[in-house]
Structure formats: C-alpha cells, structure tokens
Length: 471
Image (cartoon, rainbow, N blue to C red; front, side, top):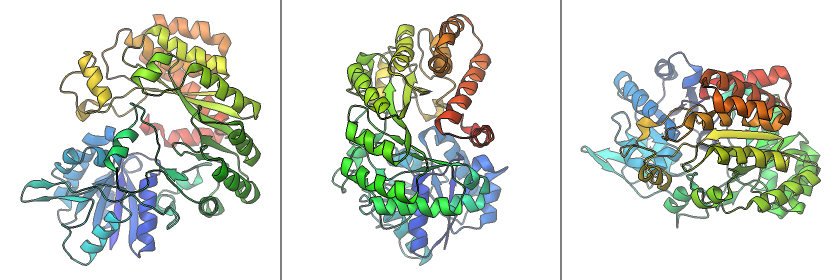
C-alpha cells in the first residue's frame, strides 16, 4: 500500500512528516509530490503510482485544491483522494464538496488516517472510521472529529520523505522543528481558537514531546543532512521552565547548534531567557502585531500591553539574545499613524529582526465578519477572493491602503537602518510604485534572513530562492 502526499508549497509540512512517520512505522510506503517543485504535479503523481493520494492544504490554496484534485480524478479515476490539514478541519463541507475529493480527514490523522489506509489496503468498509468524512449517494457525510494524538513520542517525524525526493531541501542549512502541538490563546487572527473549540473533549490540547525524544529527533536529522542552525517553530516554545531546563541541558551537550525559538512576550521570565541563552538560543521570536495597544487588545484579542512588551524585551536583551518580532499591517481601523507606531515600537524595544505580513482574514471567521460589517470586504467574500500571498496585497478596502502597504514593505529597513527611516517613510507616503516597494521588501528580507538565521550569503540566497514561489 503506497500513500502519496501532495502539497503546493515547497517547505516540509509538519503534519505530513508526522503522518508519514506513523504510516512507515505501521509498514506502509509513502511518497510526496510538491507542486512548486514539479513542471506538472499531476504527471508526477501518476508516475508515483500511489494507491491513495492525500492532499494537505492551506486555506489560501482552496482554489488550487479544487483544480488539482479534479484534474487528478479525471486522469487517475480509480485512485481514492483524501484531503487533510487545518483548512480541511475548519471547512470540511467546502472541501468535501469538491468533485475530486473522496474522503476528508477531520483531525490530526495519526489514528484515523492510518485506519483509512488500512481499510483501503484490505478492501474493507471505510464508513465507520471516526474522523473520516466521505460522500454517500451524493450526500456529504461529516463525521465527528478524531481524538487528538496523545503520545507525540510514539513516532518520529519523517523528513526523509521530502529530502530523498527533493535533495535540495535536505541541503538547506536551516532546519525547522516543533516540539509541541497546541496553543492556549485565542488571538482573532489565528485559527487556533476555532481548532481548540472543534477538538473540545477529544483529549489534551497542549501536548509536547519529551526533551529526550525531541533531542533524538533533531539528532537523526542533523546526522544525515547538513545543518548550520535550527528554528524551533512551536506556537510557544519557551513556556515551561522545567521542560526547558531538561531540554537545554541535553541540547547543549549533544547538539549545540545555534537556534531560534518562539515565545509569548508576556509569559517570558528571566529563568526562561537564562536557559535559552545557555543552550545556544541566539534569537527569540514573538508577536508584537501592532504598535497600537487598543488594536492589539480589542481587534486582535491579544491582551498584551506595550509596557509588558518593553519589559519582556528587556529580559531578552539582558540575556544577550536577539529579538525577532512578528507584525501585521493593513488591519481594519488602522491609520497611517498606527502603522508608523508599529515601526516606532519595534525601534524603541530594540528589535533586531522585524518580520511583517499583511493581514488576511479567513472567510467565515469573526474577523472577516467584522470587516464585512465595516464595509471593508464584500458580503460574498470567499476563498476565491484570497490571494496566494500574505505579503504583496491586502483584500481589504482601506483608506490609505497604498501607503499602509508601502510602510509594510520598508518597515524592517526602517528598524535595521534607523537613519534611513525618514527617507523611507517619506517615499512610502508619496510614491505609488508597488514594484519598487516589493524590491525594497525583498532586499530587507534578504538582510533579515541572513542575519537572523546566521547563514552565509550563498546559503541565504539558496534558501530564499527555493521559497520564492510562496511570496
């Protein structure tokens, strides 16, 4: 039995790696096709000769899923096609209604998807598998969500799935890992609160690998593939001092590569920062989102004050660690002064690397509803209206939209080169040329990425070149 995963973007998906690792442990064969790496993804899938095709999709890939799955169904009609991932969990009726989709995995998949594979392999009925949705006589059968995977130490994520088929991914000097699943917070711009509600009563939502298992997982990768630095990309990596102490001791002794990790700035304590610095963390990433405290607390439902951001930044700097911040522009109700306050706040706290995106509300969410009520989105706003990128444009009808987009593109350069800030803001307010500001954003991103990930010029270029299609 061979399962072939398919995705659009070039970076390895943690859900796919986890499922592949679990399936291989159960004796099944897996493969992967990445649309961005193939001249023709449908032809590549046909050549792989799978017994089951499994899509993992992001919400801004809704139209791509419909088109690609439909084309596959025409060319390989006998092969069942299943969709999974966060988008499928949030919008099961929309995804399962596509003509090319036969099944939908409503959950994390280690148990339910593996059971589906087993039933198909043995030609057994699939209608009673918890978490597997399907079509019956033209009707959508949406089942209850599968239980959460409890023991994250029961398998190793399978990176060889990606690295063997696409060796250039294995050669990238920066490797990304995750030690946990779940986040306890309810920020309005994040899908987490909706996912948390869907999984209510289905097991512990916040789960973590043991420090020993996580270190062994990292060692398995860096032993076989060249690695210069790591990004530990959990929703919240620095949240448990006891876990961090155990991990930090093992990591320093057995791996000792420089790494970046994530934190929530109002939870970060001096003890956390001490452990991180001692174990090799050179940068902590956390969300500022906006310099306007009222927008951050009210619109984004992230109850962190500017005062607390200053205090947390002080803790990080005192430990000798650098800071990467996540920031959003083109928010509903955001003025030009608000956008500038985001730049100013990052400058004031001493941000080293300012990561910026454009807000993209997901259809059928409270945030999208708010934007519709304010007249910033059309009433029939759907996935068909979503751009492929969180970088280039905004879907909102905003006052001073072009200026806000321009400020977004030059924000990191303003913080990195403060003497250039007056000039950059001046042209952002007065020049209408999206190509110019996209070039400035690309230049700033190159500088940020090189310094932030501690990569050489050549490695930085290769890394960003591979990921260019997602911009």
